[in-house]
Length: 130
Image (cartoon, rainbow, N blue to C red):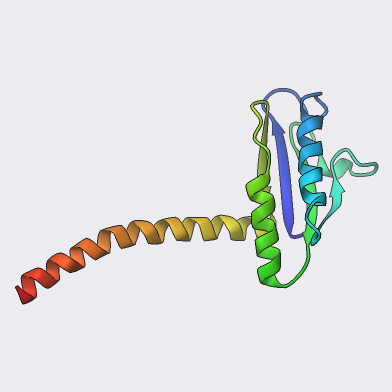
């Protein structure tokens, strides 16, 4: 599995009734992507290891296929479509989840550095060349 989705209820455990609809939305989102497949999920028979010992966290393991670029694009769509819910926090991890987080951070940092570097470069050029 190269994408891991974590569900964390704000109160109670992953067995709480407010977690099931969020889990179902995540599973439908993944099912809608032809290159993504849920390999195992908490709540499945025999998947007790995907639930934390205290029951406060559950994992959904996803395999995203295709080339590296196709997998990254599919993961990006899945992560962007993850549901927001006031009672359950949904997070993405795994190699593709981390890769997407790094890309977003680099893109943000490049915008910030360019917004600082360009004006300074122009000011230096004006001072040097008058």
